[in-house]
Amino acid sequence: MSKETVLSTKHLLGIKDLTPNDINLIFQTADGFKEVINRPIKKVPSLRDITIANLFFENSTRTKISFELAEKRLSADVVNFSASSSSVTKGETLLDTVNNILSMKVDMVVLRHPTQGAPHFLANKINANVINAGDGTHEHPTQALLDSYSIREKYKNFNDLKVCIIGDIMHSRVALSNIFCLKKLGAQVKVCGPPTLIPKMTTSLGIDVEYDIDKALEWCDVANVLRIQFERQDEKFIPSLREYSTYYGITLDRVNKLSKEITIMHPGPINRGVEISSDLADSEHSIILDQVENGVAIRMAVLYLLAGQNG
Amino acid sequence: MEKGKVILAKQKFNLTLDRLCQQLIENYGDFSDTCIVGIQEKGALFSDRLITHLEAFGQVPKLKYGKLDITFFRDDFRRGRSLTPSKNEMDFIVEGKKVILLDDVLYTGRTIQSAMNALQQLGRPDSVELMVFVDRRFNRHLPIQPNYVGITVDALNEAYVRVYWSEHSDKDEILFFDDK
Image 1 (tube, each protein chain N blue to C red):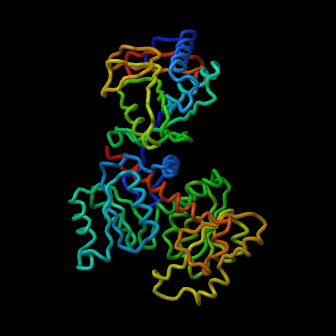
Image 2 (cartoon, chains in turn cyan, red):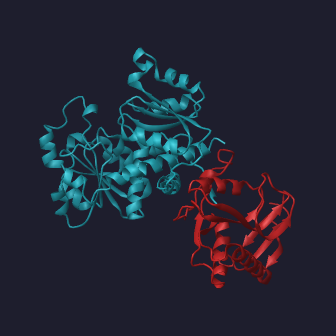
Image 3 (spheres, chains in turn green, purple):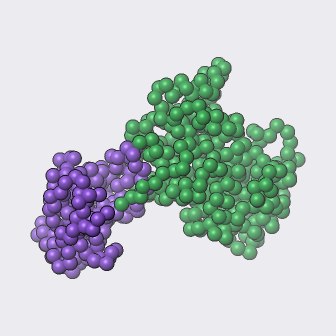
């Protein structure tokens, strides 16, 4: 008999709000969906009476497609919205936009927004389940879940596992969500990057900082490499891309010199030749494409578990 | 829960399983193009045991065997219960196959309806038959009837029937409880 289980939260706003049990429940459910999406017919009817609005106030390729695929494979009805082609440009507020969409009987909202806390604001104002698909430099919970799920797939558990998050920690929502998620699962976490791109709050999260990339790589089992988020930088944090690439760019040569095998992850989009070299991104060390596949299964699990609470 | 009443135990339990095997052998011969599909999780305990009995009759070389998880196809999702899936162990598709669907207890018929929907995702079977170890007739919500029945039980809606398998508990028996 399937086990009866529920998430402790009505919305997925951030990993910070989840318990380790929630995370494991999402993983266990994602196992089922991963099997489903590898079948000849990749669809199940679970969410056939649900309508989901994907509200993307910021550009996205992977996350948007991944959510949309996850929704369609659960048989949900989907409406897509992107800020650039909407009445937001005519001066409508976020709450008005969402309330208008909800009055068309939408059950769940997937929100990406450039402002930190936008999904939290919305969750307090509306009845629908809200899923954060990235809010400013704050959190990107489904990315962290799929990253940890991909690690779990390879290493089975997180005890004594060392994960280093490398790059622009300051402007990355992926970094913060990953730190919360990995800590809750019991992994050891370090961050590495130029001092200007490491936020001051890092130590208050109980995370060590390493500024030497080679030492960081030697320490870790898994390196999660982030891109420099120029779109969120209003001043110069690094002298030049070339200098960043020389000191912090990870290459196959650097990885081959290590005393052990490590796994390379990247949430995308990749800037090849900047934070990671092409030969490494395409090498057997990399599980970047597994992350993308797992993204659909994880998002199906999150949507399924949240929708299941509304009975 | 009060102590249940035993309605089928050791010797008769195994005789019933043997009878079900013989009925299948009579209808399916060498089981070519045939597959047995146990519904996760309790139906799969039944199918595991049935396969062991079929092996004792020497009738399994051409038989395909799988365990089907129906969690994502259940019709009670969002109706008070949230369920996490069990493992789906179907390494074949059922296109053109003769399928024998197995569950331990047939009650409302809703599980079987969900299983038929789940099965459709794996192709168009040539035929589907239903075998249950216990048929609780008079409790059906849907027009579903089994082709092969181990034992038939007449019970009120409040009653509960549970099958115990010696592989997972200390003995083989079917217990009947007056209330859930």
